[in-house]
Amino acid sequence: MARTQDDIPAEDRFGLWYRFRTLVVFNLLYVAGPAQLDGHRDPRKAVEHDYERRRDLHRARRGLPPVVKKPTDDKGGPDVVVLLAVAGVAALVLLLVWGIVSAR
Image 1 (cartoon, rainbow, N blue to C red):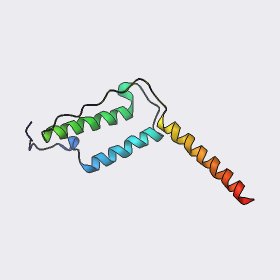
Image 2 (cartoon, helix red, strand yellow):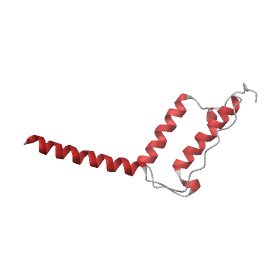
Image 3 (cartoon, helix red, strand yellow):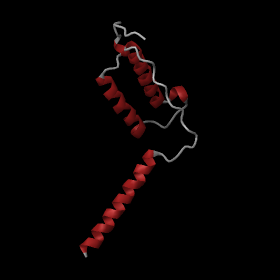
Image 4 (cartoon, one colour):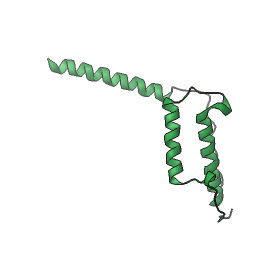
């Protein structure tokens, strides 16, 4: 594929600022956003799809093929946020126990 020198519209740019802003927005939606909604109504999916669309356009302009997303396994697994919350509580309990034991 050949690299193109086409003028990029503002709504399709894939610059550093867009990538940083998208990362922040996606994480804020994950932590403090609404519950997961159906397909096209889920704001996290919308941000993810727009990022992938712009990334693939950027790669096409550079003459690279689009990124192929690996299929997710249906095993599920524990949620990372739940694991971090449990680890945080466990760390606080251990810190409290250590404080009580060392105060004697």
